[in-house]
Length: 543
Image 1 (tube, rainbow, N blue to C red):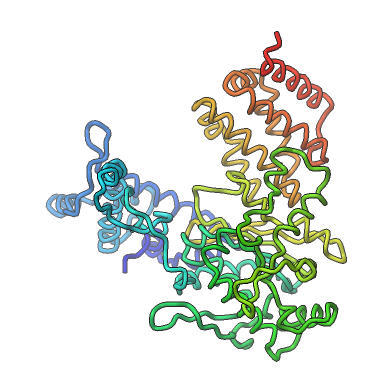
Image 2 (image 1 turned 135 degrees about the vertical axis):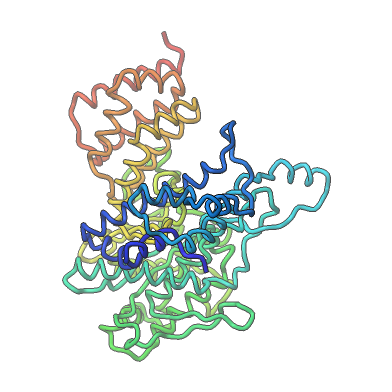
C-alpha cells in the first residue's frame, strides 16, 4: 500500500509516526515539536505539488497520470517540487520511491476535485438521462466520493461496523479509558453515556457504533457476505480491563437507518449482562443486577441500554427551546430530554420502541462520563445545535445520588491521530478557531446579511453548551462582548447588515448573564441594554 506522508517523513529521521503520536499525546515536548514540524512539512509538500499544476492564469489544470515532474527530475537529475519543499522544511532524506506513488495518487485525487460535474449531471437529470451512481460522505475519508455530481448512495447498513472502523474505535476507546484511569487514581469509569448519529456513522462506516461494542468488550464479526451479525465476548484476560456499561442515545436518523445495528447493540449489552463474571470486572452485569432487583425485572429486561425517540420523532427539542429562550430553568430542559429520549429498544421484542423512563433514569444515574464524536472538519460543536441538544451531562448530574457532574469528552477523529479532549477543551478550541477568530468572523461579516446571522447562531449555540453541560468558560462571553459589542465600528457593521441577528446576539449575552453563565461588569450590562433598545427602535422604525 501507499505510505502516508507523515509516516514517510518520520521514517526519514529514523522514527515511527505512531510512536511520535503517542509520545506527543503524553506531552513529551521533543515529540510535540517534531509532530508540529512534520505537520507543517506535509502542508508545504502538498502545497508545492498543487502549485506545480497551476497555470499562468492561476488556475489548477487537470492533473495528469503522466508523471511529468518525475520525468523532468530524472532527466535533469533534480528533485520533485514536493521533495524540494520537504528539504526546505528540514527533511532532506525522504525516499523518492515512497513519495512518488503517494503524490501520483494525490494528483489523481486533485484531478477528481476539480472535475466538477454537478451542472453536467443536473442537465442530464433534467433530460431524463442516466447519472453515474457513487457513494456520499467525507472525501477525506473516502476519495471515491469524488468527483461531485454523482447519483449519491450511502452504504449497506448491515455491513457496519467495518473492520477498519473497529480498529479506529479501539484507539479512541483505549485513549478515553486510559485518560479517565489516570485522572481517577487508577479507577475505570463504570458507565459511559454516548450519542450515536446516523450520518456520522455513514461517513465513518460505523466507528462510533464500534466504540460502543469495544466499551462492552464485545467483538463483531462479518459473515461470508460481509454482514455484521455475529458477536462474541472478548475474554477478560484478553480485554485487560472491566467491561464498561453504556447508555446509548441514538438520534432519530440513526434509528431510521440502522435498526439492525440497534438490535446488535442490544444483543451485545445483554451478552455482557448475562456473563458469569465478577462485578468488579463487569459493570454491565453489576448495574443490571441492581436495577433488576430494585425494579422487579429480569436481568435481560433491566439490561436495556439503547434508547432513542419514539417512532417518527426526532431530537430532544432542547435546542429549539434554547433558541427561542422560553425556558424557565434547566430542569425544564432535562424533563424534556427524558420525555423524548427514553424510548427503549429491545431486541427481544423487535419493532417496538417502548417508553421506559424508569430504566432510562436508573441507567443514566450511573453514568460517569458523557461522550460524543466529531468526525468531520466541516462541522464542529457550535456549528449546529444538534450536539448540545443530545448532550445529557447536567441531566446525569441531576440523576446521580451523589450529585456529581460527570466528566464530558469529545473524540476528534478528523485526522489519523485521533484526539480525545474534554468537552470544555473542545468548546474553547472551537471558540478560538471560529467565533473569536478574526479571520472567521470578518469573513462572515464581509459576506453580508447571512454572515451576520451565522455569527449570531454560533453565539446562541455556545449558550446551549452552558445550559446542557456547563462547558463554557466565562472568558468566552467576555471576549465575545468585547469583540462584537464594545467595538463601536463592529456594532455599526452588524446593526447595518442584519439588525435582527444583532438583536439576537445582544439578547444571548444578556440571557447568559441572567441565567448565571456569565459574570461581568455593570458597565457591560448597561451597554447591552442600551444597544438592545437602540436595535429594537431600528427594527421598529422608531426615529
